[in-house]
View 1 (tube, rainbow, N blue to C red):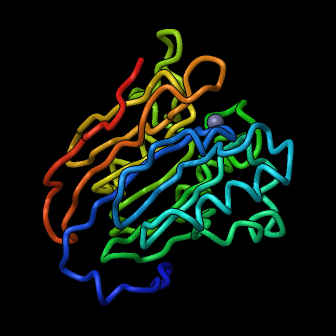
View 2 (spheres, protein in one colour):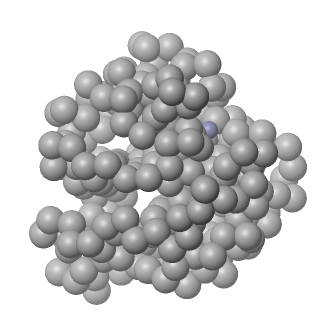
Length: 236
Ligand SMILES: [Zn+2]
């Protein structure tokens, strides 16, 4: 089975799950006002080019202190070190997904290593490697997390789409109920297409300061999404 079962799986079964999403906090995580919820997702770039292990430790301490029952992290291109399991093991306050999955709160969650070409490691520099990461995503995935966006969806930087065409193509087959990403700070927001809710949860704005708030959705394991895009701080 590609999905291992996480703790508390039974207790949450059948209950509505409130998902809190963020990415691109770039060492500014303590400035984020985090709404309460059952599942917290961080879609990467929690450091600034992994310049300090102190920042990683502080981020992990912060994760531990958050009250959410389940926490999942997918590293971004700023966490290029996280290609190595030794770095990943420094995070104990969240489940770290790198081309792997877990079932939590009745949802099958997969983290795939996809960041647009040219962004740096913990992404896939070539179409071939990106294709390999995408081909591992199991059918029946409810929540897909990638650091980078798919092409044409919440991926505009200075008017130019930056997302992955391969990822967009793969989504037609995977059809997740929710796809969470970041990377393109200007693409923050939500969109809906073909039964999938897309969330670009990048909180950083110009100069890597936090200018936006986490995005939440409320979700029953067997229902459609009930409520979406409750932005707590939808700043500029
Ligand atoms: Zn990034």
